[in-house]
Length: 338
Image (cartoon, rainbow, N blue to C red; front, top):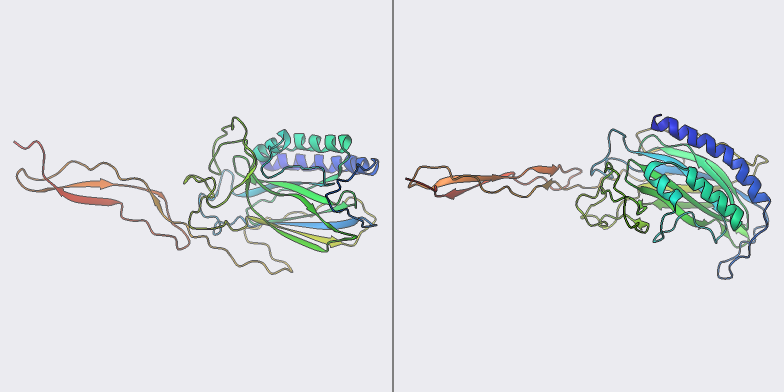
């Protein structure tokens, strides 16, 4: 089964599980709310439209940009509405088995079971939602979800494809502000490492991290390794690799809304909002270390010439530093002359 067929099967399973979890959310009693967390006192539930925009373009992220087998793209989104005492994932926390499987392989079954178990055990989860995968690094997907006063938080995760165990997402964004719901929330997204696979590049083979590391944000300088696909030492900060916009919409009688189909364009999506200008991240040329000096070539008694070479590891892009010279020579005196 190819990856797109697998994504479709996963998405159909989500649609089935939505009914179960919406029912679960309506039939549980609220848990005590921690006193140090602001209480939401909104009297009515709210409906939100979530728009995910991929900004993973070759101009913004030129280093090792995946162009085939598979090309740059995004998995389906897995989202949860919940109360403040639940976390799907946390920065500097350990990834659950469900987050591990999803971030490494795009398999969501274990993650959904964890969400269901949290809803049954601590009554913190109201519902789960999804939207289909985006085919391309710069596509768009949309879906809708509902929140209640006692389940006013949103978390979601989207896998970066291909990657060892990298993803984007949000952890516990509160959509409530006192007694009313926020009208619009816009968030820039940056890559995270789930801490379960030790690969440095988008196409690294599986290499399990033992012991497991904590979830960390990937930056232009961390991990500090030249092989890292996001390593751009000239940048203070990576450009956002994606953006999510949450817009409050008028509530309808329909509880579950089917998500809209994603765009499959290689261009940045255009709409009513003003899109960011196209980002061009400079990528400097990288070369290998020099080879040893070669044999000294020349006549006995006279000075000769010897050479050494190096090769291009990565060509520059977007006005980055050009490659330096790849060959050097120097004078020498031939050895072993008779």
